[in-house]
Length: 404
Image 1 (cartoon, helix red, strand yellow):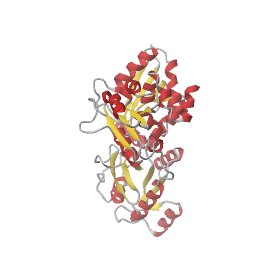
Image 2 (cartoon, one colour):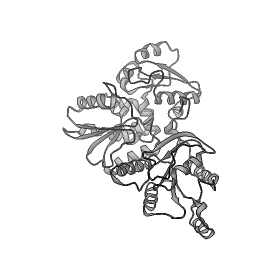
Image 3 (cartoon, one colour):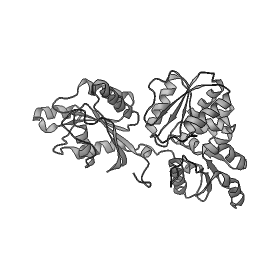
Image 4 (cartoon, one colour):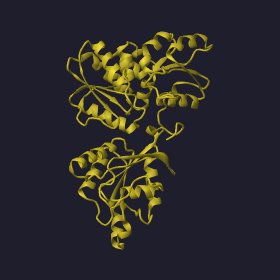
């Protein structure tokens, strides 16, 4: 995926599930018109989820996911099944692939139960329908399932149309920042360039925020943290908003006059992913942490960690200094997220620029279901540094939580 493509987190995630040798990979290739997945007569060819960002007409930008067989066996098979089940947490549209001559097996029925449990839109595609006689075809149609053949191409177009119908957004998405500004406004972005920044480009939240500002017909002024004060003094016009990287929150707050709204990329993304209110409420759990309490710090992506990594080094240090306690920190990254959250007293999540909304809803809901406070990197940093109230002031409903 190129730098100018739709970010993966903002694409519709379409996942193909089923048992080994149901023809998931063959059907995926037929739907996309590309050889995205390896096809073999041998069971268990797909050993890990395979992700492909692409354009799928008439739906648009999507991520197609091929999963291991849900009936895989043995020690490795158990791990593969776990990875396939993890894909459910980020899936927007599920395609259950079964063999038309055999019908649905108990593993397929379990998948259907999981789809319904998650309120996940799904389609049942009975593959290999070219092997059926007329009576069996009628039975399949009456059951509300679509009969398809990856081999002959039968009903592939109809399957794509059903996927597109289920994957189409039903209501406008919340904007990152555009609803907070007006055409002609100036927005100043504070973006440190350190060892953790990707060589030759800005990190994804910064890219996406700049794009959203430009789409709102406003101007984005990008500075490093030590340039902020001078920029504001010589700008000639008061910016409508200053947005900072959370790691330099304290300096940005000190250099930004009180009459200029200030927030962070991480806080904006908490709102964008639907977890801002939960995160503001959850951060107060810092005040009741005790020695030995377990704190889970979650990173939505996997990247090479630097010696002063924010998730594994800086946040634990800041939390220890703030609480004067010695919590027990655990860490997760990428698709990994503990199934059992009961041991934890607090979950601190990144801004989740690499995770789609459905996965963040799943993670937040899991925490809420277990009664575990859930918060966000930027909100945690602002709270520790005593500037959270200022950082959420432009969201009246959220700001009121700070008065509780």
